[in-house]
Image 1 (cartoon, rainbow, N blue to C red):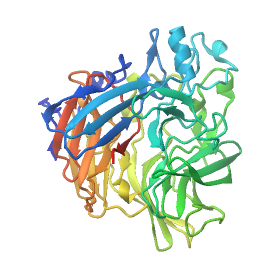
Image 2 (cartoon, rainbow, N blue to C red; image 1 turned 90 degrees about the vertical axis):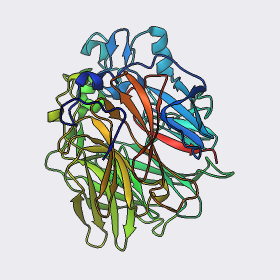
Image 3 (spheres, helix red, strand yellow; image 1 turned 120 degrees about the vertical axis):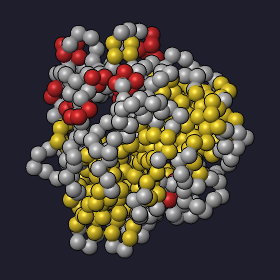
Image 4 (spheres, rainbow, N blue to C red; image 1 turned 180 degrees about the vertical axis):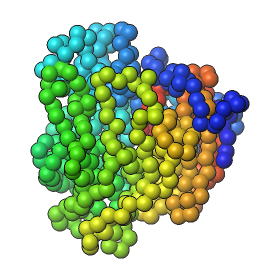
Length: 497
């Protein structure tokens, strides 16, 4: 096990932490910077890292003394760290959505949040206001010449990839209708069919749900152009945050979730607070053939899924007559209730996400599920060059304790074949976000490269960028950032080459 410079001798078990250290990571970003030069406080920045590390997440969590009901209601703030020749610089910008601009001018919340943030005045002040504020806070990807800030309930915002200036909502050259939902979880096909592609989706929910599967060229002269587009209709309400791809399939898991909109309409709950587990029903795998694959034009396959709930998939691949999907499984949907205060949550009552593998037999229409461990984890990924193929290694954020839910405080590299693991631990005062694996340019070795991860440092109440070697999780560099970035969501790497 690799220890972090964030560790301090506490005399406690390694998974103990101070709640105030964790809670202090939910704060407003107070300033925006342009090309601020960064310096490593420990180690050296690898000279072979050349590109942009983009990160998105809630950056505005409080207005006029009112805290959001849930961090997912916070306005999106993009961080861009550029690496070149062993040096790095940071820029950050709030996404100038219409909602952000109006609330900045008003100095208070004037929109309801999907996860329960309400305007002051109780249900009467919120009833029958069904508007959503596109908060553009979930992911950030580069497509063609545009940087896209994503929030899955509405359309993407276009930004300048270097300055981060917001250009506004984009229809991607007419591909999308104005404000059409566009997933915050695209997948990048590394070239299974001759060229790199961004594969993504949009979903229209209801008694019947329509999934629109889209594929865009992501490299070369045609980067940003749509090259595949299909729609499929499925029975039931769709709660789809993520999906996975193989060379032939797009793999969705329809969680067994119901939606009762009445409390939202009456101003009593946010829309996401109206989601509940649906007793007596089972989730479904929706397997949609990709237009570039061997089953192009065929109808989707629908197969019963195991009990539980999935936000995020790690990877998927094909083996003979099976599709193998690795995902983070929860025993139940973690509800967001109106009476909850997220800063005072009882961690012992929250279900833990467990890395599991589902083997979907396409001949027998059956699924076999295997757990990798009982350790709580999230934000798992493989080497991007292995997306859609069988991967030997995965990297993920984990709780420092072995069993049960707790804040994410460590990074784990897991050998998916032998289950050998290596751990970099930021506890007791550090809290990790999504790790990003960047392959070493030109290397055929799957675990050669780097892990970049933003870490909330409870000791100094600020954010560190930690660079680890991907193979053994040893520290290459720690950079103390000049801004405090709240616990965030997703990001991506864009190589200068």
